[in-house]
Amino acid sequence: MPTRPRIEASDVVFMYAPEPRQYDLYSGTVTGWGGRARSREGRALGEFLARVDEAKRRKMRYCASVDFLVDFGGFIDFCPDRFLDSVCRDLNGKPLIVPWLHDHSHKGHPAYWFCSNSPDYRNYLIDQTERASLAPIDGLHIDDYRGTSACAAWNGGCFCEHCLREFREYLKRNGKLSASEAEHFNYRDYLIAQGITAERYRQNPWTVPFGAEFQRFQREAMMNLVKQVYEHAERLRRKPLLRSVNSSASSPEALLVEPLVDYFCGEVDHHAASGKVSAEPLFVYRLVEAFDKRQTATASGWDWAWIAANEKPGMVRTWIAQAYAFGSVFMVPHNQWCYTPEKGTHWWRGKPEDFAHLYRFVREHHDLFDGYLPLTNTLLEVDEPRFEKAKALALAMLAASVPFAVLYRTPDGRPHTTGNSRTGGYCILSVERTFANLPEETRNQLRVKSAGSFIASLRRRVQKGGYPLVIHLLNRDYRVEEDAVAPADVSVHINNTLLQRLRLTPREAEVLSPEGRTIEVALQKSKEEIALEIKGAGLWTVVAVK
Image 1 (tube, one colour):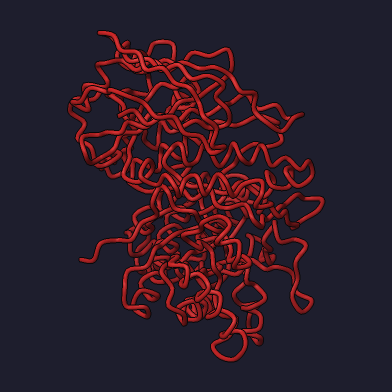
Image 2: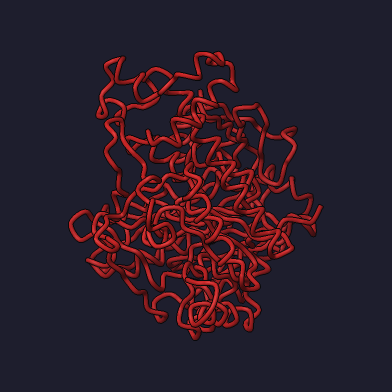
């Protein structure tokens, strides 16, 4: 079986295909969300082929994309006589629109939420896939991949004829209804007869009669469709393609699609309006590593709206640094979708002079990023029933620079760990623990001391005995008024018990920073630990211990 392609930790990923010279300014390696030909011939096809060629000539990988919701206008044109038959409906039969596209329309029609269980709409998604595959692409991205399963989860749908028919078959197939019962069963009519209103269903669809079964049916249908789209594209291109979806690996629901994708490519909430650097993205980056995958992140539409309104590129630089420091990727902020209910869709364009040096730094030192995993003696157990408790504990540990990796147990009981590590020799941390009563062996792995505010990420090389050990120091003392961090002295203390996992003795340290400044470091060794003292650490300091 061919090896699956993957995103590397030093990749520089563009969300959309930019003006070509930006590839060079940022040292780009991947286009993650590259669209498709608007038609199968003529000028539109030529423009798409040219976009792909611009990337390929630079030895970049180009991922085309398919839209499960946004291209509503394309479906109206694709199926002009009966597109209304494919609109998602609420319990009252009312057509549903995509909320964040409330300010969009096509030929006088709003942005309908089209049903991904409709045969006509599925045909259109396959048509998109085929147009995406007309060029020599390297990957395929799916935007709004959840389709109707998301509409069922929180937008009051879907009770169209296609969903009602398929759900009836699902219940029969799973022994919830007999053949005679299924013949006359209409889920919409059944709920109305039970006194369920459209608003009650929207508020909590899991608690209505057959609600859990309906959600599982929609999820199963979504997974089958996503698999079909990827496999169709790979047959057309005759090779494995980089597979991604627009999502952050941030919840059990988001992780459902994990077996079908090679990486997650999408929005991660950064809480920009707080004026502070949020640690929540770090949990996403640590969680996705349990599956040996990466998040290629951007911020949310409302995060970018705040950046656009306040013009704070310095905050964005903190986002870029923390993604790479924790083994994931932050996509080049060259053209960012912004959203607020008041302004709807608008855009913010980042300037290369604000960000390009960070990406060039990563590429120039790719050997300190690729092939690394967290160095720790602790695995934090995470599962679906106790997910929020585990997340709270993880965030506290991240904020205090307590090293850990995630041991994630899926609902079927399968364990997932970073690098498929065996759990023997690790301290397994249950979520019943609190931060205040962490085991001593966990708490004493690493200490970071500073008058400022820093988070450290320890990463070991998988090959070559684990060295160099890389320490990423992230300065969290961001001042929103200055749009910058305040440099500070910092010392890092690593317990020798942790270093013994590498079976080598550290001898020297090299300090690097994206600004190219010369930074002094003193490496001190004792029986208990090694200690490094760094003067004037700025936004992001990378220490290679050799």
